[in-house]
Length: 432
Ligand code: ADP
Ligand code: MG
Image (cartoon, rainbow, N blue to C red):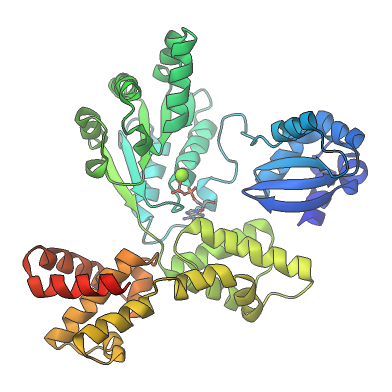
Protein backbone atom coordinates (compact mmCIF):
# COMPACT_ATOMS: atom_id res chain seq x y z
CA UNK A 1 0.00 0.00 0.00
CA UNK A 2 2.76 2.43 0.93
CA UNK A 3 4.49 1.76 -2.38
CA UNK A 4 1.20 2.57 -4.06
CA UNK A 5 0.93 5.83 -2.19
CA UNK A 6 4.48 6.73 -3.19
CA UNK A 7 3.77 5.94 -6.82
CA UNK A 8 0.62 8.04 -6.80
CA UNK A 9 2.35 10.76 -4.85
CA UNK A 10 4.77 11.27 -7.72
CA UNK A 11 1.95 12.74 -9.76
CA UNK A 12 -0.18 14.38 -7.13
CA UNK A 13 2.21 15.71 -4.51
CA UNK A 14 4.57 18.66 -4.94
CA UNK A 15 7.72 17.77 -6.94
CA UNK A 16 10.25 15.80 -4.93
CA UNK A 17 7.84 14.98 -2.15
CA UNK A 18 7.49 11.33 -2.92
CA UNK A 19 10.93 10.60 -4.44
CA UNK A 20 13.02 12.50 -1.95
CA UNK A 21 11.23 12.97 1.33
CA UNK A 22 8.61 10.28 1.70
CA UNK A 23 10.90 7.58 0.40
CA UNK A 24 12.89 7.90 3.60
CA UNK A 25 9.85 7.09 5.75
CA UNK A 26 8.54 3.72 6.76
CA UNK A 27 4.94 2.92 7.60
CA UNK A 28 4.75 1.79 11.23
CA UNK A 29 1.12 1.14 11.91
CA UNK A 30 -2.35 1.94 10.76
CA UNK A 31 -4.67 2.24 13.68
CA UNK A 32 -7.92 4.06 14.12
CA UNK A 33 -7.55 5.47 10.64
CA UNK A 34 -4.24 7.15 11.46
CA UNK A 35 -1.16 6.10 9.55
CA UNK A 36 1.98 6.35 11.67
CA UNK A 37 5.14 6.97 9.70
CA UNK A 38 8.64 6.47 10.98
CA UNK A 39 10.66 9.49 9.91
CA UNK A 40 14.48 9.35 10.09
CA UNK A 41 15.03 12.71 11.79
CA UNK A 42 13.48 15.95 12.94
CA UNK A 43 14.71 17.87 9.91
CA UNK A 44 12.93 15.59 7.48
CA UNK A 45 9.86 15.65 9.64
CA UNK A 46 9.76 19.44 9.56
CA UNK A 47 10.23 19.46 5.82
CA UNK A 48 7.31 17.10 5.38
CA UNK A 49 5.16 19.05 7.78
CA UNK A 50 5.78 22.42 6.26
CA UNK A 51 5.79 21.40 2.62
CA UNK A 52 3.13 18.84 1.96
CA UNK A 53 1.45 17.38 4.98
CA UNK A 54 -1.98 18.48 3.83
CA UNK A 55 -1.73 17.15 0.26
CA UNK A 56 -0.33 13.91 1.68
CA UNK A 57 -3.29 13.58 4.00
CA UNK A 58 -5.66 14.33 1.16
CA UNK A 59 -4.01 11.67 -0.97
CA UNK A 60 -4.32 9.08 1.80
CA UNK A 61 -7.92 10.04 2.39
CA UNK A 62 -8.84 9.88 -1.26
CA UNK A 63 -7.26 6.45 -1.54
CA UNK A 64 -9.21 5.37 1.52
CA UNK A 65 -5.94 4.37 3.20
CA UNK A 66 -6.11 6.61 6.24
CA UNK A 67 -7.77 9.70 7.56
CA UNK A 68 -4.73 11.21 9.18
CA UNK A 69 -0.96 10.92 9.40
CA UNK A 70 1.30 10.90 12.38
CA UNK A 71 5.00 11.49 11.90
CA UNK A 72 7.23 9.84 14.45
CA UNK A 73 10.93 10.27 14.86
CA UNK A 74 11.90 7.08 16.58
CA UNK A 75 15.08 8.37 18.19
CA UNK A 76 13.94 11.72 19.47
CA UNK A 77 10.53 11.78 20.92
CA UNK A 78 10.61 14.88 23.07
CA UNK A 79 7.53 16.23 24.84
CA UNK A 80 6.77 19.14 22.53
CA UNK A 81 7.63 16.97 19.58
CA UNK A 82 4.92 14.67 20.74
CA UNK A 83 2.49 17.55 20.75
CA UNK A 84 3.41 18.52 17.26
CA UNK A 85 2.93 14.95 16.12
CA UNK A 86 -0.52 15.06 17.60
CA UNK A 87 -1.31 18.27 15.80
CA UNK A 88 -0.09 16.68 12.59
CA UNK A 89 -2.40 13.76 13.14
CA UNK A 90 -5.47 15.92 13.05
CA UNK A 91 -7.96 14.55 10.62
CA UNK A 92 -8.06 16.22 7.27
CA UNK A 93 -11.39 17.71 6.51
CA UNK A 94 -11.62 18.71 2.88
CA UNK A 95 -12.83 22.26 2.25
CA UNK A 96 -16.54 21.62 2.37
CA UNK A 97 -16.32 18.89 4.99
CA UNK A 98 -17.38 16.27 2.46
CA UNK A 99 -15.43 13.06 1.95
CA UNK A 100 -14.55 12.91 -1.76
CA UNK A 101 -15.21 9.15 -1.83
CA UNK A 102 -18.77 9.44 -0.62
CA UNK A 103 -20.58 10.16 -3.87
CA UNK A 104 -23.59 8.53 -5.53
CA UNK A 105 -21.33 6.81 -8.06
CA UNK A 106 -19.60 4.78 -5.39
CA UNK A 107 -22.79 3.87 -3.52
CA UNK A 108 -24.04 0.38 -4.29
CA UNK A 109 -27.81 0.14 -4.40
CA UNK A 110 -29.54 -2.99 -3.15
CA UNK A 111 -32.82 -3.99 -1.62
CA UNK A 112 -31.76 -2.82 1.83
CA UNK A 113 -31.02 0.77 0.84
CA UNK A 114 -32.97 1.29 -2.38
CA UNK A 115 -35.52 3.69 -0.95
CA UNK A 116 -33.05 5.71 1.06
CA UNK A 117 -30.89 6.02 -2.05
CA UNK A 118 -33.78 7.03 -4.30
CA UNK A 119 -35.01 9.60 -1.80
CA UNK A 120 -31.49 11.02 -1.40
CA UNK A 121 -31.06 11.32 -5.12
CA UNK A 122 -34.42 13.03 -5.47
CA UNK A 123 -33.54 15.52 -2.73
CA UNK A 124 -30.20 16.17 -4.38
CA UNK A 125 -31.83 16.75 -7.75
CA UNK A 126 -34.42 19.18 -6.46
CA UNK A 127 -33.46 20.34 -3.00
CA UNK A 128 -36.30 21.61 -0.86
CA UNK A 129 -38.89 20.30 -3.26
CA UNK A 130 -39.02 16.52 -3.15
CA UNK A 131 -38.96 15.48 0.48
CA UNK A 132 -38.44 17.98 3.22
CA UNK A 133 -37.08 17.04 5.62
CA UNK A 134 -35.60 13.79 4.45
CA UNK A 135 -35.00 11.60 7.47
CA UNK A 136 -32.71 8.59 7.02
CA UNK A 137 -32.25 6.11 9.83
CA UNK A 138 -30.39 2.84 10.23
CA UNK A 139 -27.71 0.99 12.17
CA UNK A 140 -24.06 1.86 12.35
CA UNK A 141 -21.95 1.57 9.22
CA UNK A 142 -24.83 1.10 6.80
CA UNK A 143 -24.25 4.17 4.64
CA UNK A 144 -26.17 7.08 6.14
CA UNK A 145 -23.20 9.42 6.18
CA UNK A 146 -22.19 8.26 2.72
CA UNK A 147 -25.61 9.22 1.34
CA UNK A 148 -25.61 12.60 3.05
CA UNK A 149 -22.21 13.48 1.64
CA UNK A 150 -23.38 12.28 -1.77
CA UNK A 151 -26.29 14.71 -1.61
CA UNK A 152 -23.86 17.46 -0.67
CA UNK A 153 -21.51 16.73 -3.57
CA UNK A 154 -24.35 16.47 -6.03
CA UNK A 155 -25.91 19.79 -5.06
CA UNK A 156 -22.54 21.57 -4.99
CA UNK A 157 -21.81 20.36 -8.49
CA UNK A 158 -25.18 21.01 -10.04
CA UNK A 159 -26.14 24.22 -8.31
CA UNK A 160 -22.78 25.95 -7.98
CA UNK A 161 -24.01 28.92 -5.95
CA UNK A 162 -25.88 26.83 -3.42
CA UNK A 163 -24.68 26.86 0.16
CA UNK A 164 -24.37 23.30 1.40
CA UNK A 165 -23.52 22.58 5.00
CA UNK A 166 -22.81 19.13 6.38
CA UNK A 167 -22.53 18.90 10.14
CA UNK A 168 -22.77 16.20 12.75
CA UNK A 169 -25.17 17.04 15.52
CA UNK A 170 -22.22 16.94 17.91
CA UNK A 171 -20.38 19.56 15.94
CA UNK A 172 -23.55 21.62 15.70
CA UNK A 173 -23.77 21.49 19.50
CA UNK A 174 -20.13 22.44 20.00
CA UNK A 175 -20.36 25.33 17.58
CA UNK A 176 -23.42 26.62 19.34
CA UNK A 177 -21.74 26.40 22.73
CA UNK A 178 -18.63 28.19 21.58
CA UNK A 179 -20.70 30.86 19.87
CA UNK A 180 -22.47 31.48 23.17
CA UNK A 181 -19.17 31.66 25.03
CA UNK A 182 -17.79 34.14 22.53
CA UNK A 183 -20.90 36.27 22.21
CA UNK A 184 -21.25 35.26 18.60
CA UNK A 185 -24.65 33.62 18.57
CA UNK A 186 -25.77 36.00 15.85
CA UNK A 187 -23.05 34.63 13.57
CA UNK A 188 -24.08 31.12 14.41
CA UNK A 189 -27.71 31.81 13.57
CA UNK A 190 -26.75 33.64 10.41
CA UNK A 191 -24.59 30.74 9.30
CA UNK A 192 -27.16 28.02 9.72
CA UNK A 193 -30.23 29.95 8.69
CA UNK A 194 -28.76 31.01 5.39
CA UNK A 195 -27.96 27.58 3.98
CA UNK A 196 -29.69 26.03 1.00
CA UNK A 197 -29.05 22.45 2.03
CA UNK A 198 -28.45 21.46 5.63
CA UNK A 199 -27.22 17.93 6.20
CA UNK A 200 -27.26 17.09 9.88
CA UNK A 201 -25.85 13.72 10.86
CA UNK A 202 -26.58 11.49 13.87
CA UNK A 203 -29.35 13.60 15.32
CA UNK A 204 -29.79 11.16 18.22
CA UNK A 205 -26.87 12.96 19.89
CA UNK A 206 -29.15 15.91 20.57
CA UNK A 207 -30.73 13.88 23.36
CA UNK A 208 -30.78 15.87 26.60
CA UNK A 209 -29.20 18.91 24.98
CA UNK A 210 -32.07 21.26 25.49
CA UNK A 211 -30.63 24.53 24.32
CA UNK A 212 -29.20 22.91 21.21
CA UNK A 213 -32.58 21.39 20.47
CA UNK A 214 -34.16 24.78 20.90
CA UNK A 215 -31.70 26.35 18.48
CA UNK A 216 -32.06 23.51 16.02
CA UNK A 217 -35.83 23.86 16.21
CA UNK A 218 -35.61 27.47 15.09
CA UNK A 219 -33.02 26.71 12.45
CA UNK A 220 -35.24 23.94 11.14
CA UNK A 221 -38.32 26.14 11.02
CA UNK A 222 -36.58 28.96 9.29
CA UNK A 223 -35.09 26.65 6.65
CA UNK A 224 -38.29 24.71 6.17
CA UNK A 225 -40.35 27.89 5.77
CA UNK A 226 -37.90 29.09 3.16
CA UNK A 227 -38.19 25.74 1.35
CA UNK A 228 -34.55 24.91 1.94
CA UNK A 229 -33.62 21.25 2.04
CA UNK A 230 -32.96 19.62 5.40
CA UNK A 231 -31.59 16.08 5.57
CA UNK A 232 -31.36 14.36 8.93
CA UNK A 233 -29.85 11.02 9.89
CA UNK A 234 -30.28 8.97 13.00
CA UNK A 235 -29.63 5.51 14.32
CA UNK A 236 -33.36 4.99 14.97
CA UNK A 237 -36.72 6.15 13.64
CA UNK A 238 -38.11 9.48 14.89
CA UNK A 239 -40.64 7.93 17.22
CA UNK A 240 -37.91 6.02 19.06
CA UNK A 241 -35.67 9.02 19.61
CA UNK A 242 -35.70 9.65 23.29
CA UNK A 243 -35.08 12.76 25.29
CA UNK A 244 -35.63 15.00 22.32
CA UNK A 245 -38.52 17.43 22.42
CA UNK A 246 -41.73 16.15 20.97
CA UNK A 247 -42.26 19.19 18.75
CA UNK A 248 -38.90 18.55 17.13
CA UNK A 249 -39.50 14.85 16.65
CA UNK A 250 -42.86 15.50 15.07
CA UNK A 251 -41.21 17.78 12.54
CA UNK A 252 -38.86 14.97 11.55
CA UNK A 253 -41.90 13.15 10.27
CA UNK A 254 -43.17 15.99 8.10
CA UNK A 255 -41.30 14.90 5.03
CA UNK A 256 -40.11 11.41 4.24
CA UNK A 257 -38.78 8.94 6.77
CA UNK A 258 -36.77 6.15 5.21
CA UNK A 259 -34.51 3.48 6.61
CA UNK A 260 -31.42 1.54 5.60
CA UNK A 261 -31.33 -2.11 6.58
CA UNK A 262 -28.28 -4.36 6.74
CA UNK A 263 -27.43 -5.42 3.19
CA UNK A 264 -28.25 -8.90 1.97
CA UNK A 265 -25.61 -11.22 0.64
CA UNK A 266 -25.81 -10.07 -2.99
CA UNK A 267 -25.47 -6.45 -1.99
CA UNK A 268 -22.53 -7.25 0.29
CA UNK A 269 -20.81 -8.97 -2.62
CA UNK A 270 -21.52 -6.01 -4.89
CA UNK A 271 -20.22 -3.53 -2.31
CA UNK A 272 -17.00 -5.48 -1.86
CA UNK A 273 -16.51 -5.68 -5.60
CA UNK A 274 -17.03 -1.96 -5.89
CA UNK A 275 -14.61 -1.15 -3.08
CA UNK A 276 -11.98 -3.49 -4.51
CA UNK A 277 -12.36 -1.90 -7.92
CA UNK A 278 -12.18 1.65 -6.55
CA UNK A 279 -8.98 0.88 -4.68
CA UNK A 280 -7.42 -1.08 -7.51
CA UNK A 281 -7.29 -4.31 -5.49
CA UNK A 282 -7.31 -7.63 -7.30
CA UNK A 283 -9.26 -10.03 -5.11
CA UNK A 284 -10.47 -13.42 -6.35
CA UNK A 285 -14.21 -13.86 -6.67
CA UNK A 286 -14.39 -16.69 -4.13
CA UNK A 287 -12.62 -14.58 -1.52
CA UNK A 288 -15.08 -11.72 -2.05
CA UNK A 289 -17.87 -14.18 -1.57
CA UNK A 290 -16.23 -15.64 1.51
CA UNK A 291 -15.94 -12.18 3.10
CA UNK A 292 -19.51 -11.28 2.22
CA UNK A 293 -20.73 -14.46 3.82
CA UNK A 294 -18.73 -14.31 6.98
CA UNK A 295 -18.42 -10.71 8.01
CA UNK A 296 -21.20 -9.01 9.95
CA UNK A 297 -23.45 -6.92 7.81
CA UNK A 298 -21.94 -3.66 9.00
CA UNK A 299 -20.37 -2.31 5.82
CA UNK A 300 -17.59 -0.51 7.60
CA UNK A 301 -16.36 -3.84 8.97
CA UNK A 302 -16.74 -5.47 5.61
CA UNK A 303 -14.50 -2.79 4.13
CA UNK A 304 -12.05 -3.15 6.97
CA UNK A 305 -11.83 -6.89 6.33
CA UNK A 306 -11.16 -6.31 2.66
CA UNK A 307 -8.39 -3.82 3.47
CA UNK A 308 -6.89 -6.17 6.00
CA UNK A 309 -6.80 -9.08 3.55
CA UNK A 310 -5.10 -6.97 0.89
CA UNK A 311 -2.60 -5.53 3.38
CA UNK A 312 -1.76 -8.98 4.78
CA UNK A 313 -1.26 -10.38 1.34
CA UNK A 314 1.13 -7.54 0.47
CA UNK A 315 3.04 -7.66 3.73
CA UNK A 316 3.43 -11.43 3.68
CA UNK A 317 3.97 -11.66 -0.05
CA UNK A 318 1.29 -14.32 -0.30
CA UNK A 319 -1.52 -14.45 -2.83
CA UNK A 320 -5.05 -13.96 -1.52
CA UNK A 321 -7.04 -17.15 -1.09
CA UNK A 322 -10.03 -18.12 1.00
CA UNK A 323 -7.85 -20.16 3.34
CA UNK A 324 -5.42 -17.34 3.92
CA UNK A 325 -8.24 -14.82 4.32
CA UNK A 326 -9.86 -17.03 6.95
CA UNK A 327 -6.57 -17.10 8.81
CA UNK A 328 -5.94 -13.35 8.54
CA UNK A 329 -9.44 -12.57 9.74
CA UNK A 330 -9.56 -15.22 12.43
CA UNK A 331 -10.45 -12.82 15.19
CA UNK A 332 -13.28 -11.12 13.33
CA UNK A 333 -14.81 -14.26 11.92
CA UNK A 334 -14.68 -16.14 15.16
CA UNK A 335 -16.69 -13.38 16.76
CA UNK A 336 -19.48 -13.88 14.31
CA UNK A 337 -19.63 -17.63 14.04
CA UNK A 338 -18.25 -18.79 17.32
CA UNK A 339 -18.42 -15.72 19.55
CA UNK A 340 -19.20 -15.91 23.25
CA UNK A 341 -22.81 -16.47 22.36
CA UNK A 342 -23.32 -18.00 18.95
CA UNK A 343 -26.44 -18.98 17.08
CA UNK A 344 -25.19 -22.50 17.39
CA UNK A 345 -25.05 -22.36 21.18
CA UNK A 346 -28.51 -20.84 21.37
CA UNK A 347 -29.86 -23.57 19.13
CA UNK A 348 -28.38 -26.25 21.35
CA UNK A 349 -29.80 -24.78 24.53
CA UNK A 350 -33.24 -24.25 23.06
CA UNK A 351 -33.35 -27.74 21.54
CA UNK A 352 -32.35 -29.12 24.92
CA UNK A 353 -35.19 -27.34 26.73
CA UNK A 354 -37.67 -28.74 24.25
CA UNK A 355 -36.04 -32.16 24.20
CA UNK A 356 -35.70 -32.19 20.44
CA UNK A 357 -32.65 -32.93 18.28
CA UNK A 358 -30.88 -29.70 17.42
CA UNK A 359 -30.88 -30.43 13.65
CA UNK A 360 -34.65 -30.22 13.64
CA UNK A 361 -34.40 -26.49 14.27
CA UNK A 362 -32.91 -26.02 10.83
CA UNK A 363 -35.25 -28.45 9.14
CA UNK A 364 -38.44 -27.49 7.38
CA UNK A 365 -40.70 -29.52 9.68
CA UNK A 366 -43.51 -27.51 11.13
CA UNK A 367 -44.99 -29.28 14.15
CA UNK A 368 -46.16 -26.71 16.62
CA UNK A 369 -43.53 -27.30 19.29
CA UNK A 370 -40.80 -27.30 16.72
CA UNK A 371 -42.05 -24.06 15.20
CA UNK A 372 -42.12 -22.48 18.65
CA UNK A 373 -38.63 -23.72 19.52
CA UNK A 374 -37.32 -22.37 16.24
CA UNK A 375 -38.92 -18.99 16.86
CA UNK A 376 -37.51 -18.77 20.36
CA UNK A 377 -34.05 -19.64 19.10
CA UNK A 378 -34.31 -16.97 16.40
CA UNK A 379 -35.53 -14.45 18.94
CA UNK A 380 -32.63 -15.13 21.28
CA UNK A 381 -30.14 -15.08 18.41
CA UNK A 382 -31.38 -11.61 17.58
CA UNK A 383 -30.97 -10.54 21.16
CA UNK A 384 -27.62 -12.13 21.98
CA UNK A 385 -25.60 -12.12 18.79
CA UNK A 386 -24.45 -9.44 16.40
CA UNK A 387 -25.83 -11.41 13.48
CA UNK A 388 -28.22 -9.69 11.08
CA UNK A 389 -31.69 -11.03 10.42
CA UNK A 390 -30.32 -12.47 7.21
CA UNK A 391 -27.47 -14.23 8.97
CA UNK A 392 -29.82 -15.64 11.58
CA UNK A 393 -31.99 -16.86 8.73
CA UNK A 394 -29.01 -18.70 7.23
CA UNK A 395 -28.34 -20.27 10.61
CA UNK A 396 -31.74 -21.90 10.37
CA UNK A 397 -31.59 -22.70 6.70
CA UNK A 398 -34.05 -19.99 5.87
CA UNK A 399 -33.33 -17.88 2.85
CA UNK A 400 -35.79 -15.21 3.81
CA UNK A 401 -35.03 -12.89 6.71
CA UNK A 402 -38.73 -12.04 7.12
CA UNK A 403 -39.17 -15.43 8.79
CA UNK A 404 -36.77 -14.23 11.48
CA UNK A 405 -38.49 -10.89 11.78
CA UNK A 406 -41.81 -12.61 12.13
CA UNK A 407 -40.40 -14.95 14.80
CA UNK A 408 -39.05 -12.03 16.81
CA UNK A 409 -42.37 -10.21 16.76
CA UNK A 410 -44.27 -13.35 17.64
CA UNK A 411 -42.11 -14.16 20.66
CA UNK A 412 -42.18 -10.55 21.81
CA UNK A 413 -45.94 -10.81 21.81
CA UNK A 414 -46.03 -14.22 23.55
CA UNK A 415 -43.62 -13.11 26.26
CA UNK A 416 -46.23 -10.65 27.45
CA UNK A 417 -48.70 -13.28 28.62
CA UNK A 418 -47.64 -16.83 27.79
CA UNK A 419 -46.03 -18.18 30.94
CA UNK A 420 -44.65 -21.30 29.33
CA UNK A 421 -42.81 -19.35 26.68
CA UNK A 422 -41.58 -16.92 29.28
CA UNK A 423 -40.17 -19.66 31.47
CA UNK A 424 -38.40 -21.36 28.55
CA UNK A 425 -36.88 -18.10 27.41
CA UNK A 426 -35.80 -17.17 30.94
CA UNK A 427 -34.27 -20.58 31.38
CA UNK A 428 -32.17 -20.37 28.25
CA UNK A 429 -31.19 -16.81 29.12
CA UNK A 430 -29.78 -18.00 32.42
CA UNK A 431 -27.59 -20.53 30.66
CA UNK A 432 -26.33 -17.92 28.22
P1 ADP B 1 -23.20 5.23 8.78
O1 ADP B 1 -23.11 6.71 8.64
O2 ADP B 1 -24.56 4.70 8.46
O3 ADP B 1 -22.68 4.71 10.08
P2 ADP B 1 -21.27 5.27 6.65
O4 ADP B 1 -22.01 6.10 5.67
O5 ADP B 1 -20.17 5.92 7.40
O6 ADP B 1 -22.27 4.58 7.67
O7 ADP B 1 -20.73 3.98 5.88
C1 ADP B 1 -19.69 3.15 6.39
C2 ADP B 1 -18.81 2.71 5.25
O8 ADP B 1 -19.53 1.83 4.41
C3 ADP B 1 -18.36 3.86 4.37
O9 ADP B 1 -17.03 3.64 3.99
C4 ADP B 1 -19.26 3.79 3.17
O10 ADP B 1 -18.61 4.24 2.00
C5 ADP B 1 -19.55 2.32 3.08
N1 ADP B 1 -20.88 2.04 2.53
C6 ADP B 1 -22.05 2.00 3.18
N2 ADP B 1 -23.06 1.69 2.36
C7 ADP B 1 -22.52 1.55 1.14
C8 ADP B 1 -23.04 1.23 -0.15
N3 ADP B 1 -24.34 0.98 -0.33
N4 ADP B 1 -22.18 1.17 -1.18
C9 ADP B 1 -20.88 1.40 -1.00
N5 ADP B 1 -20.32 1.71 0.17
C10 ADP B 1 -21.11 1.78 1.24
MG1 MG C 1 -22.47 8.08 10.02
